[in-house]
Amino acid sequence: MTRSSGPCDLRGLVALVTGAGGGANGGLGMAIARELARAGAQIAVHDFVAEVAEATASELRQLGFVAEAFSADITDSREADQLVEQVIERFGKIDILVNNAEYRSAAYRPDQIPTEEWQRSVALNVHAPFYLSRAVVRDMRLRKFGRIVNVSNIAAIRASILHGVPYVTTKEALYGFTRHLATEVAQHGITVNAILPGFVVTPELRAQWPEERFERLAPTIPARRAGTAEEIASLVVYLASREAGYLTGAAIPIDGAVSIVPGGRTDPENAFV
Ligand SMILES: NC(=O)c1ccc[n+]([C@@H]2O[C@H](COP(=O)([O-])OP(=O)(O)OC[C@H]3O[C@@H](n4cnc5c(N)ncnc54)[C@H](O)[C@@H]3O)[C@@H](O)[C@H]2O)c1
Image (cartoon, rainbow, N blue to C red; front, side, top):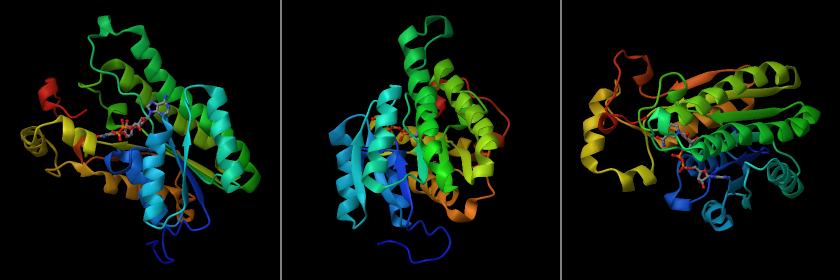
């Protein structure tokens, strides 16, 4: 059911969410797509593989929302441009772009990082948001309205024990991209913000980590728990809303206050970033 009119009513808006596939097993992108749909937006669900994107789109349609699947390798600038063209062809416009897809490198010693790991991280975490933002801004400028939300990580302002140099560098680059782009497009009614989630439980993490690890990590967070994908998605809904027109160029941690407490972690078994 779509929410009734009120704050964050996204009816009449079209959202493209990258890396939002997977349906019930999807990650943050899936939750973001679902919450945007619940607020009334029509959703272009993107993922790398068509069936993965379709899993989310069909689930959203079953819930009564308007959603369509699109697949593309967004690290390729032509495919990214084509994706934007296809979504505009289908829905007539793009009001909201959520750059959520990521490549999360494993932790390598800095002197042993394979070149491909570095290149894949930069390609998906930095190049792709740039290609897509460039393409949607052309359309948003004409209509004097747009919302771009870049999904970064508190690693952008701290460090990442689990994912190392490529992840931190690219998530921080996304933060810099956000701030600068915001200043260039603000006069056209377009906002650009980054969200910096901390420890968030997703189905993938649930499958990978034993319960004991979640229990061990919870006390290290001032909120004493991990965040939920829905909590992250609600922030995206607000940033995507018409009401959020004066909030731009921000990088908002959403992390149970973990990024502001002192103390560092160095042991991967006791880290969640
Ligand atoms: N899960 C967390 O705890 C957490 C914490 C902080 C930030 N984040 C951020 O949230 C976002 C989503 O995280 P997640 O854990 O749900 O990730 P995820 O791995 O579940 O989702 C990433 C998506 O990107 C897609 N993708 C990969 N390569 C692609 C390509 N070349 N072209 C197109 N799509 C491609 C994948 O298919 C996948 O659907 C990421 O940007 C991540 O950095 C997550």
